[in-house]
Amino acid sequence: MTETTPTAPLPEVARRQRWMGILARTPLARLEETFAALPEAPAFTHLRRPEIGSALVRGRAGGSGERFNLGEMTVTRCSVRLSASGAIGHAYVAGRARRHAELAAVFDALLQTPGHHDRLCAALTDPAAEAIAAARAETVARTAATRVDFFTMVRGED
Amino acid sequence: MYVAVKGGERAIDNAHRLLAEERRGDRAVPALSLTQIKEQMTLAVDRVMTEGSLYDRDLAALAIKQARGDLVEAIFLLRAYRTTLPRLAVSEPVDTARMTIRRRVSATFKDLPGGQVLGPTFDYTHRLMDFKLAAEADDDAEPCERGEPRQDETVPRVADLLGEEGLIEPEVPRDGDTAEPGDITREPLEFPADRSTRLQSLARGDEGYLLGLAYSTQRGYGRNHPFAGEIRMGDVAVEIVPEELGFAVEIGDITVTECQMINQFKGSKAAPPQFTRGYGLTFGQGERKAMAMALVDRSLRAEELGEDLTAPAQDAEFVLSHCDNVEASGFVQHLKLPHYVDFQGELVTVRALRREHERKEATDAAE
Image (tube, rainbow over all chains, first blue to last red; front, side, top):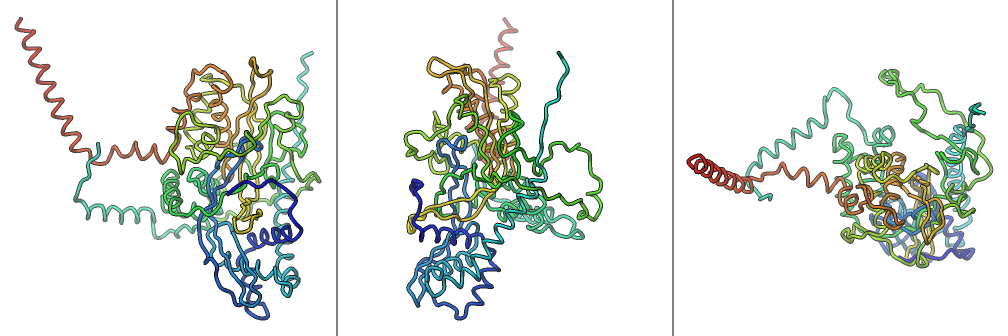
């Protein structure tokens, strides 16, 4: 896999990146709940059955220098095609999570389908994004309570 | 040399059963759940993930349970599992400047943009035994307050601040960032090893070993005058670019600890006096390891920076060939496997040498 140069992605790509990032971080129970609440269970076929593997995680020397391999992490991927619209959904999800990857792929496909997009944003991705942001805000607030202002003591030597 | 032996199947089988019983311990005591290990032995989980070179909290917890808390054994288990996984993706380099910070301290600047936050640290604890934890209830600790976050969401790295004045060597990708980093999981370690390969080896390296080497540089064996420029710990997003998509997607967040060591450098004919850098990065919260790694990374740059090579921590072949605890443990511990044939050979040799020695002594005495 090659490094991409950071260029501003197209708006539709940016939107898809956003929801794929949210789906990867949404708890499985939440995905199952939303899936069960769909007015009609969407028929789909697997282009790639859920598969567990690893992703090589890279860092940079000094944070900004040359790339190096820090280690690996588990990741699960899945690709589906919706029978109704033919829309293709992909998912790559951290951890060993076959069902999570499958549902994330289905939702990725549904979110590309005009008839489903707005409803799923309201029912799933927007509230999930809020939950992720709230958890992050809680981490930040707890950490902020440990903010420290060091001051050096005057040693009175002169 | 180890020669394969046969026999002992029943003894081995029973030894494994005995091991399982001992691992479980007193059955009157409830069994440890993986969730308990994951939630309450977090730093053990972090170490096993870092040195096991696989970020997966559930698997690390399982390995710790299975290994009876022997972390090097747990690391071995995780490494062995890792080899069974197909590699599906390679991540973009994690961007630690965009970390959701849970700890950030600097020993070089007291006032720095973004400020200092202590986070969950053992620092400033008195290292007194807390006998309250020995009591049954462990849920009545005073809750941490909630603070007011500052507006500056991105927290610049300290080294980048010094870099603006040119006082520290820049860390920028070389050759247009095209060179593939070395990967010791695919290619065996060879010397001289480039920095990417060294950093990967150190990241997987044994914490105790690197800590000892780092300490040796502080005590004068290849001194390089370090300051902990910055230590930060927190969560970063992991991005991959799947071929079928052609754009980056985030697969989740991981916790990492980063240490930027700032070291003195007098300068050379080619470079003006400026600070140099050592770098440490670990999975999870691994501050001691990240600091040790940064010190050793810097000392392994001695040759590149034209410094005298006098100490073990400056010798890449010595440091990197021995830092992997799975390899080291395997080779040291293989000594306990049957070496009967080998040893019989040695016995014959020693006996022959002794006979020779006695005959010589007898001859010398007679003369």
